[in-house]
Length: 268
Ligand SMILES: C[S@@+](CC[C@H](N)C(=O)[O-])C[C@H]1O[C@@H](n2cnc3c(N)ncnc32)[C@H](O)[C@@H]1O
Image (cartoon, rainbow, N blue to C red; front, side, top):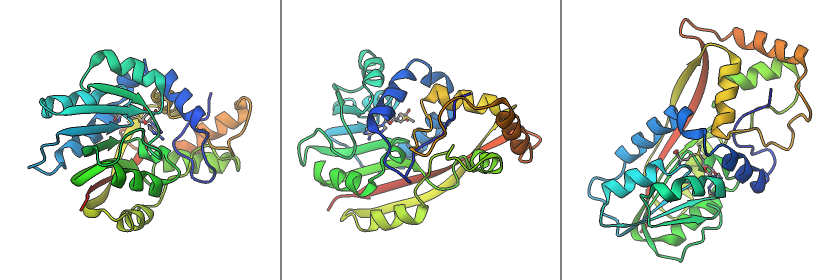
């Protein structure tokens, strides 16, 4: 079984690996993205009621589900969808929603300064080790009065899986997440006005560990941490993992917690 998880912060992830992993997952992503749908909908619900962007950006658009939602919500606006994974863009492009689908990195946006009124990003920025670079890019591409609305993940995410692996060996199997306090600090220092920032846990339940790890793989959320163990996971270690995870079992199944962060900021 592959070792899987989310964003490392203990070492810089190789962005080519992140892109390749999500490109490979482009076909399977939508079938397992229930949490991602739910979180993106919550984020859409947090946009300021009066917002009417002439140009919006869906950053880390993935398969483009929320590019299409934004296209429907703002039918006369111009939409741009950006993702680091070419495979995701190839999947999203024919489905429309945005006028442009561009390969690019949230830490170095391929957009002109002061060219957008809304920057929407759902569950992509946990992959960026340098969140202050993301915020300064957002501040650069937004026009005065423009809004950044993001959802991301913080410490506590996949904690059950992390703790279970910890009981088995000392390797990094689940990537690190920023602390919520770091989101607070970085947003506070960004020069953007913070309209709201909160975190809320979402728990999914699985019949067994394999269902969870298969789902993470189908999402493209591999562990790309430099400290991950190489080679195959031995049968004995895998059995130890299954055993360790059992201590978390609840009547609904094995829980996997996602600690979701929602932030809304305005420029100027
Ligand atoms: C979990 S998916 C979310 C996709 C979509 N926003 C949704 O909610 O369904 C994360 C996406 O972020 C993209 N991504 C990761 N790092 C990125 C970066 N540095 N810049 C732009 N996109 C990135 C991935 O390629 C992937 O498509």
